[in-house]
Amino acid sequence: MFHTKARNAGVMLFVLLIFSSESLGSSYHYIRLGHTEDATTITTAGVAMMGGGDDIDEAFRWLCQKGGGGDFLILRARGDDEYNSYVNGLCKTNSVSTLIIPDRESAQDTAVADIIRHAEAIFIAGGDQARYVNFWKGTPVESAINDQIAAARPIGGTSAGLAILGQFAYGALNDKEDDKDLSSQQVLQNPFFDRVTLVREFLKIPRLQNTITDSHFAKRDRMGRTLGFLARLMQDGWSSDPREVAIDEKSAVLVEADGKATIVGSGHGAYFIHPTQAPKMCQAGAPLTFEAIDVFHAPAHGHFDLTQWAGQGGESYSLTVRQGTIRSSKARNAIY
Image 1 (cartoon, helix red, strand yellow):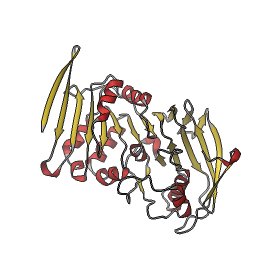
Image 2 (tube, one colour):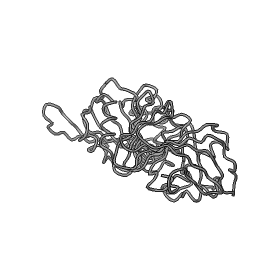
Image 3 (cartoon, rainbow, N blue to C red):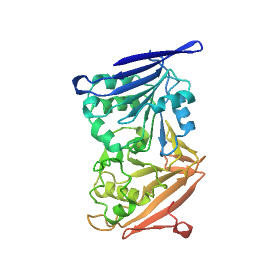
Image 4 (spheres, rainbow, N blue to C red):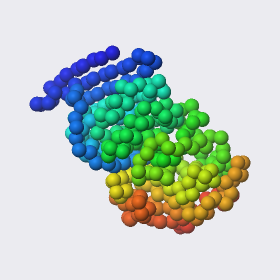
């Protein structure tokens, strides 16, 4: 099905294109607002990591600027095109589009990968990261996104879209809807709890290699489960020196190509976590014991260098987990 709707926008012609494909088992939906012809602009690499909750205008404007005002593409597995009008109202772009890829059949469609390859900026919406992993991993969609990253196209994500940006991710593969019910306490008491499903090597963002990312961090009390994830990465031999970027709701981390980041938004900011020793006890059915974990908390307007793994304008402290209980070096034993 193909529809066009034109409206006067000064000297520029804007159209709304809606394309749905049901052929060959593919059921993707593509909704485009703006010019029908793709633009070619000069782009700059960068990553906009958003922690979920209210969208942050500054982060989207930053992504648009990195995309050189070209074609801005929102990717999702479910939902609608609500981001189109939002981004179009914030940014001066050639077009803003939403591409909904709801199953593996759609992710195998060459037309879907071609749409991704023509974008100058990519944003992965929230939802359920299990769908992104199950539907897109190992398909032309994954290849197209990674090719765009390698070509210095900026990329961003919020909530579940943030969760899949790192080399490592919590896949939420056992969930029917999302991961909100996997609690810190469950992971601290048993890091091998059956819903601790970690995945790797989905997206290949240079500054997020050897890193796991998480969202809704302080709001949903995710420190304990994050420490369990990091312990598992070390225990399972995936990394001897993993890092984590964990971002709270209403906060974003804007990472330049050189790895230098600025924290924006009205939330509690971001947490940069680095264990310096392997876990002492990380076994199935046993509470976690994990010591010497360095944390840097960067509030809004703080800065962090992912390459040097050092921050400014925030607070450094350390955490220890003994028998599934977290202790902090901060006053009053605060972990956030």
